[in-house]
Length: 424
Ligand SMILES: Cc1cc2nc3c(=O)[nH]c(=O)nc-3n(C[C@H](O)[C@H](O)[C@H](O)COP(=O)(O)OP(=O)(O)OC[C@H]3O[C@@H](n4cnc5c(N)ncnc54)[C@H](O)[C@@H]3O)c2cc1C
Image 1 (tube, rainbow, N blue to C red):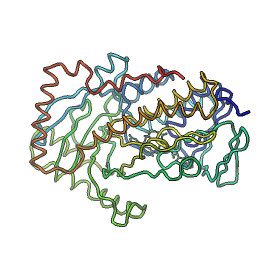
Image 2: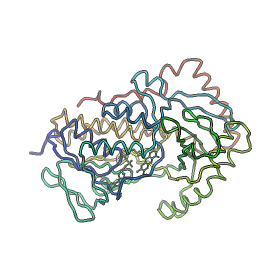
Image 3: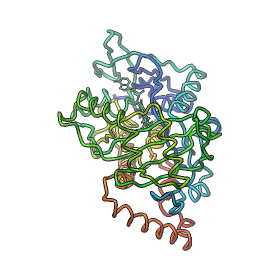
Image 4: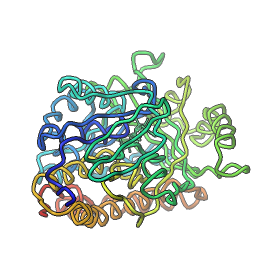
C-alpha cells in the first residue's frame, strides 16, 4: 500500500533559493523530516535587488524565528509616496498600516542577498546539507521512492521531492509539467543598489518607497537597509521582445542596449525640472555606475503542480511579476501549508496533494492578478495622460485620506490572510 503523507521521512529539495531553504527549515523543525538540498549554481548567488515582504510573509518569518534578524537588516517601508514629474508630492498611500494593526507585522524591503545570507546561516546552524553545482538530469519513481540523477552521475533517493528551483524549474520541465512555459509580461526592470556613503552628492534621507510616474514607465527609490544607508532604485517599463524572439542571444543584445543607455533614457524622462526631488533622482542616476536589467516573466495559471511523489512550490509553480511584492511571501505560504498537510493528514499522497493545490491555486492566482494590475502603471503612456493620471492620483489619495478608507483596510485585506488557519 502507498505511504500516507504523514509517513514521509526524507525530502530531496531541488533549488537553493528562499523557497528551498524555508521549506528545509520548516520541514526539519516541525515535521521531523530530513531535507537535502541540491542547487544548480556553483555557490551562493550574489545576484538580486530588493525584495518586498508584506505582513502575510513577515508573520510566517516570525514563526520561523527569523523576523527580528530580517528587520535588523532591511527597511520597514509601510508607505508609498507618489511624486509628480515636477517634483510635487501627489500623496501618500499606506501599504501596511492597517494590515500591521491586524497582524502585528508591516512591510519590509530587504536586499535579496541579505535575506539569502540569513537563511543560509539558519540552515547551517541546523546542519541542513546543501550541495552546489548539481544539474538535475532525470527523476524517476519506484514503489514508495523517488530518485534524482545529476549531470555528474550522482543520484539520491527519498520519500518525496520538492521542486523549489524557480521560474525555469527543471523539476517542472523534466517531470511534472513539461508543457508549462514562462511568458514574458512585456515589462522589464532595471535596478541598482547605491550605498549612500559612496555618493559624491548629499542625499536627504529617503524613507518609504518613492514612486514617480513617467510617460515611459515607473521610476522608484526606496531604502533597503535598517539605517537607510543603501538605496535601491528601479525603473520598470515596457520593453519589446527581441526581434529574434524569446531567446537568450536576443535578450543579451537588448540587455546590453538597455544597460548602456540607462542614464540618458532616465535623465531624458526626468526632464529639466529644478525641484529638490527631481534633482535628487537626477543625482542618483548620474552617480549610478552599474545597473542590472531583467525581463519580467510569469507562469501561466492553471497548470499542474504535482505528480506522484513530487511537488513544485514557490516560483517553480507560480512565478509572478514582482509588482505585488509577493514572491517570498507566496513561497512562505506554500511551505507552511505543505508542512501542515504533512503534520495533520493521513490522506493518501494524491488526495493530500490535490487538497494542498486546491487551497493554494485560488490564493496565488489572486496575487498574480494583483501583480498584473499593479503592472499597468509601467506601460508606455502619452505625456498628457501621465499628467491626467497625476491629477487623478492626487484626487484619489486626498479622498482616500479624508474619508478614512485607509483605516478600513482597502487594498490590504489579502495581507492579513493566515495560511495556517487552513485545515485539511
Ligand atoms: C538571481 C535571482 C535574483 C532575484 N532577484 C529578485 C529581485 O531583485 N526582486 C524580487 O522581487 N525577486 C527577485 N528574485 C525572485 C525571488 O527570489 C523569488 O520570487 C522568491 O524568492 C521565491 O523564491 P524561489 O526560491 O521560489 O525562487 P528563486 O528565488 O528563483 O530561487 C530558485 C533557486 O533554484 C536554483 N535553481 C534553478 N534551477 C535549478 C535546477 N535545475 N537545479 C537546482 N537548482 C536550481 C536557482 O539558482 C535559485 O537558487 C530573484 C531570483 C533569483 C534566482
